[in-house]
Image (cartoon, rainbow, N blue to C red; front, top):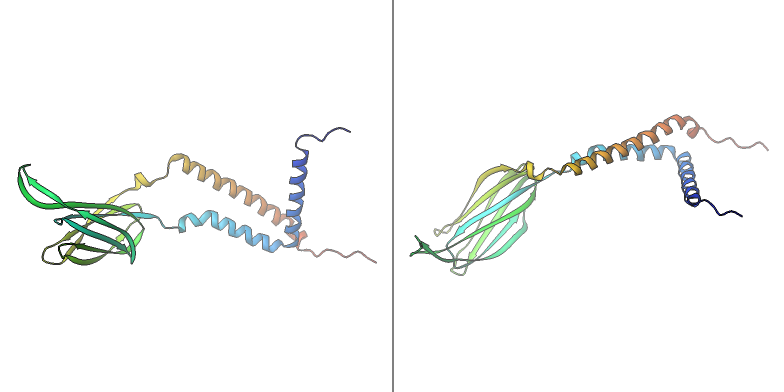
Length: 211
């Protein structure tokens, strides 16, 4: 008895699976058509329905020895950090007071958002401010925060710089996505053509054998 060829078992398994799929299609043709249409819609339109992202850059200059800054986006805490100031010198020699800088880049979904900032210090400063702005997709918005000794917290948008070049996927990602879309579309089209061709036979009730 000769041994079975090296791929015979795999071919038999694949053929049996194909026969089961065809049997299910014959049993539920309308359901299969609905699933195929939904798959085509998902492949074609879902990437366009998903919103992109943008960047929020929060910047602040302060004159505190020790402080805490917290940032919320739409009520959700985005970051909270402890700040320390150091002695500044004018011309490298003359004391110019205590000061420090804070800068943080946050990722947010594209669209309108409300940003709230709270600054507290060991020196008794405690103030909160909020501002609303529109974040276009693939853009960077800078928010300048200014804690004032008068007690209020100044907040102002500094503008927008596009980041399309940095956020664009690499060429091989685009090529792979396009190739996958083409392959899936071709497969679905072939299956749909087969179903349409066989639809009359699929919908025709099976004849019962005569007694």
